[in-house]
Image (cartoon, rainbow, N blue to C red; front, side):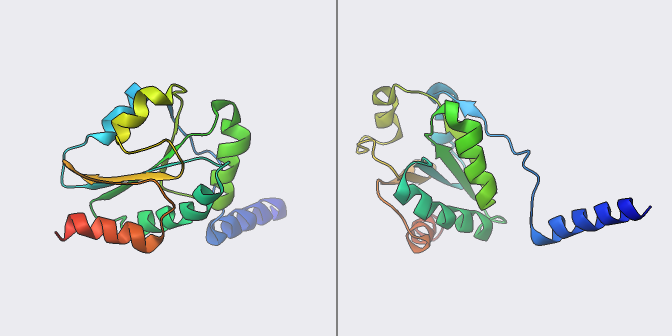
Length: 163
């Protein structure tokens, strides 16, 4: 009985301290499977960030996107983090990074090495550099191929919600 009480107490501490089980799954999509995320036509603002764990500016700005995700969780704003990490690094690289930083925004791994075939479909001005972010609502789009701050993202969202 004592042992089960200790186990329950440890589980309680984990829950209270915000430690989450590492059972998150990250879908791996090719571009044709992913492309629908670029063209939703609704009253929702979509914030799509392209990043990778090996990209320093990406790692610096990712907490800003998580903060946006949490700030707008009850509003019509959807954050999608599109990792361009290598699929072979999914478990040891990407999943470890996500779990260590407790990100809760939706994440997918884009596995389509022929980036020359799809970069222009994201935005014709994109050179392929990271980080990059597309923010859109219906046909209205803004594209950024630079590191963004929380205020940058928030201002862009407001430009769609309060024109």
